[in-house]
Length: 121
Image (cartoon, rainbow, N blue to C red; front, side):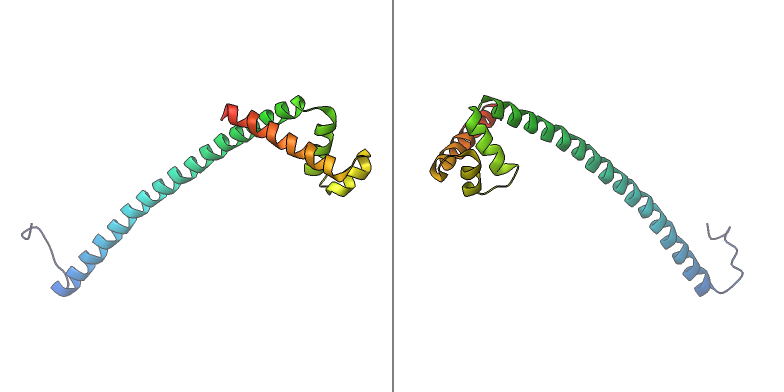
């Protein structure tokens, strides 16, 4: 295409300007690709978050079903320990039982819940 090219300044300046323009085109093209990749990344993260919420709600339902299977005193001790964050001694005083009995109740609750959840996982 050298016959069609009209250079109005020096050849050196023309080559520099041509390289500069080619570089800008390359950067713009890559920018579009990067923005597309960013969009895909965020869409994937949103999808994972939705799946994670569904998984969490499934786990909560499993845990609640497992809690319903526990004997009443065992369930009470477990809930006081895990939800109310009471120490074993405080639970024992509140329920009117020994600390060792509280340990047994909570151990039994954890065992039942582990078995229940492992069946579904």
